[in-house]
Each structure stands twice: as C-alpha cells, then as structure tokens.
Length: 312
Image 1 (cartoon, rainbow, N blue to C red):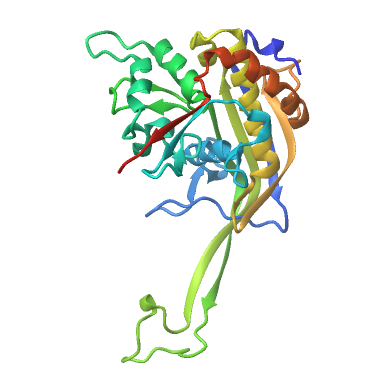
Image 2 (image 1 turned 45 degrees about the vertical axis):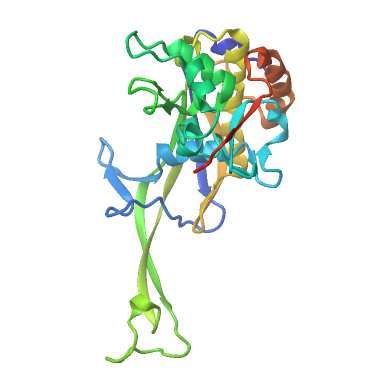
C-alpha cells in the first residue's frame, strides 16, 4: 500500500457505480414532509438523492463496528474512542456509534468528561486553537477527526468540518409506483361502529413509490484538512488509511441501505488525483492498519478506550 502520491494532493475523490442486487427497483431515503428528494441536474436530467451526507457519515462509522463483539473490528484494535457506561458500569453507548460522537449528551454529561474538555483547551478570552482540538480528538476519538465535530457545550466555535464525506445519488430516474394492502383476517371491512384503521383494524390499502435509475456513490476525502491538523506524518497516514478502509468496508458490507434498497458496487474508481494513485484493497488496508495504529499510539489516551460514567 502506497499513500505517497497523496502527500501533495488537496482531495481524494472516489466514485462507485451501484446497482440493485436483484431486479431494477430501489427505495431512496425519505424525509419528513418531503418524501424522496428529487431534483434536476443542470442539464435537465431527473435526479434522486438515494442517501444523504448525514446518513452516510453514520453508515461509514457503523462499517467499522463489530456488533457481535460490541467493539471495533479486529484490524482497528487499539484505536481510541470514548465509552459511556450507566451507573452500574454497564456499556451504554460510545463515540463511534453516537451520531454526534463525543458531543453526545451521554458523553459530555458523564463523569470524567472534564479531562477531555481540559485537553480541548477552549478559552473564550483567546482565539480558538483548532490544532489543539485536533490533538485532543486524535487522543480520545480518532473517528471525530474524519466525520467532524461541533462541541457547542464547550464553545460555539469548537468545531471541525468533515474530512470524509459522501453521498449517493441516481440519475435518469423514473418512478416505479406500486402498493399493497394490510389484511385483517378478522374484520376485513370497517363499519361505522368499527375501530378505525389508525387503531389497526380492517384492510388498509397503501401506495408506494420506488425508483429505477443509474446509481453512484461519491466520496470526498479532504487531504488538505487532514494535513492542516498538524498532527504529523504518522497521524496523517493513519487517518487516510482509516478513511479508505471505511469506504471499502461500506462498499463491500454496508450497502443494504433499506429493505427495498439492497445494492452491489460494480465499479470503484478514483477520479482525483487523475492518474497514478491505486485504491488499496480491503486486504491491503487490514494488513497495514495495525502497524499504522501502533506508530501513532504515543498520541493516544492510555488506555485507548476512555470510559466515562453517565448518571442521568
């Protein structure tokens, strides 16, 4: 695995062509009071947002979590993150799975968070030091450096943007309208004195919109931002490799987005830099990551897993 070609690049851009594992229809993400997000491209093509940047951040984080062991996947052993336990000392949640990472109320309201806050070093009477925040995040929760953080409970300026972002959209889309009926084997019809459908009685017809189209996942790794953290070569190599590993695992294991949106990656390509850089495989990344973690470990918390007690 060779990351040297990325040393002077501002961005690493990756695209992956996706298709349903069966058939041609797929279900996009839906939004309250909006439904599916449809729009037109600059040339008038019908477009559809399949997965938002916010959702993709959560999915990329979940891609490195092993639900069976309730821990990071084995190649990432030793990577720092924060665990919140309940008052009995049982694991409650952690900064990898929480949508706002260490800005989760189960973490910033937990006993022991003051040490993290002290390392962030925010002083409202001085200019905000983003590099100090980056060093604190690398110490306690490397994940937050890739997916961004906003620690408004510490200060309104204590934030970092996402270094790794992604979304999935489809073009040349058409609506595949369908529907069905929820059957009631006891009371198929509803009389005036019957319970309403809202209460679960009676046959209830419904409509459903799925889509067909050409689906593409886009990933953007901000290499200039990572270098700007000022954490040194070992940390930069780890962050880049970790980001690539998240992308590769998501494209291999995480593409069952919804019941009716189960996808396969059929082609993965680097679009920037234009030439030379070859995307490492999962096997190459899994072989390299333990060594990269060991090389960067002097900057981690000891132990790497910081356990805080939430008493709410």
